[in-house]
Length: 162
Image 1 (cartoon, rainbow, N blue to C red):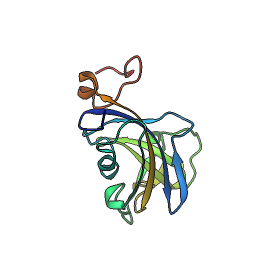
Image 2: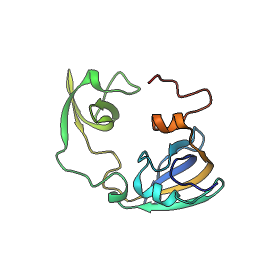
Image 3: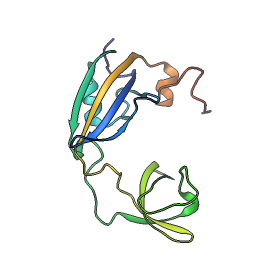
Image 4: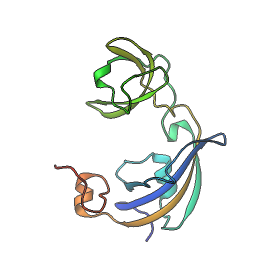
């Protein structure tokens, strides 16, 4: 089956910039998404269109096709209690997740105070030309429940209630 609108797709990826690896899913859980629901970077989704399980591809995306250009001075003071991550002690350079009314966002900590942190709201990969090396693992039709939820469910459901 080829990847098309409403396909549930599972893949491994390695992300690099100028030959330097930034992150990879190999050795951990693969990434999954539903094609055509805008849950994936537009440039990557376009490159995956028509591919099938077992296919591999390499696609290089300009910032406009991935995380956008960096915006200078996009700094916001955020209360420490709103920063989510695997640490109790925040330091400059660390990344954290923040939930807002626009969803969850990854931020980079610039300066830490007693109760607040100044955070760079640019995505850490903003302004970078990124190369994705992708191995498609599986392609199938998304179920009606997955389509209504907007994401792929693992074995045993999605683990949250709607």
